[in-house]
Image 1: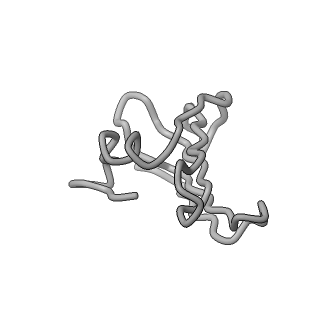
Image 2: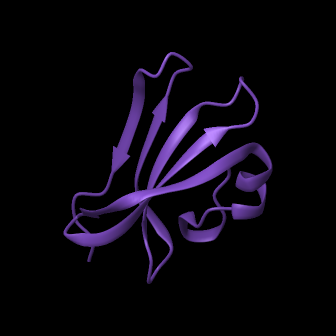
Amino acid sequence: MTFGAFGRINWTLAQRNYDLRFVGQEKVADLPCLVVELVPKFKENPKRRLWIHPPTRLPLRMERYDPDGALRVRIAFTEVQ
């Protein structure tokens, strides 16, 4: 997955490599976010979940999973100013 300027996601590239699924809404750093699951189209790509802040389109949280479903990486903002 690639991120463009200021952390924005390259959605065209993401759609080529993943099936995108909306899974809900949650807050990150006290901001409302849409939760999107990225299910890989190719087994070598990891499954990911992104928490996107709609007004800025910035990913405020990201999780990456191994093929067996184990969480391997979690990155999240705790405060946004």
